[in-house]
Image (cartoon, rainbow, N blue to C red; front, side, top):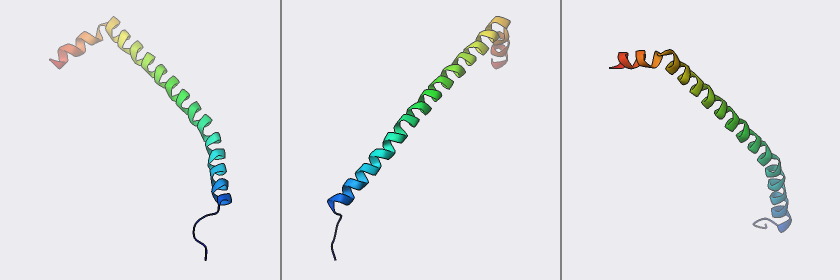
Length: 67
């Protein structure tokens, strides 16, 4: 009974891993870009809400209640 793998089996596994990674890496990159875009949108929304609170004077009311 032989032990270990042949060189052909190892090459075959390496090729399969290469094919899978060539499919997965672009998809993961696109997901990261989508997450960055969403993060930027949410940051802008939070900034707009905070600015609206400052403009309406709501930030002063909340600060008095917190003291």
